[in-house]
Length: 181
Ligand code: GDP
Image (cartoon, rainbow, N blue to C red):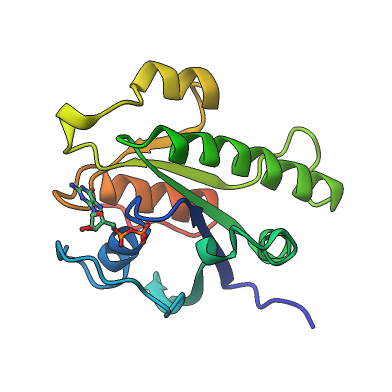
């Protein structure tokens, strides 16, 4: 069994209530609803048509596996692209993203899929930047711990800040063509 060329699996990880569902809703349907609906539905599939080709993007919200290291590890091994989400008003969620990133890089390099210098496609979202007054994780700190050149976005699923840019980076890092406007 080999994956079709036009197939990508996106794995989403992060602490509870950081906005993963809201971000995915924007990606899948657009829009934002301010009521918290805990999802049990953690798997989405989207067909993406661009320049005469069709791509299938499967998105797994693997965050409910955070207490099950073996399951999480399997999700990491089968993922092509990673979206790690924290909330800028929640320091613990930032720490979690930092350690998830290390875990992913380690798992992928052990697998031999990524040589030391090739990057695993990881996009990081510091979400809820609209909550200025509650922000506790600063931009300089994000750069310091994650690296200047990492694909890090300060997003708001609520007002849409950097959402498009972040989705474009996800696509690009995952080797998908991006629509040029
Ligand atoms: P998940 O548990 O990570 O999937 O988080 P949700 O997407 O369910 O969001 C948790 C709560 O945060 C909900 O009340 C959302 O409305 C709210 N939320 C999500 N994204 C944002 C954002 O960018 N800004 C603000 N202010 N609230 C957000």
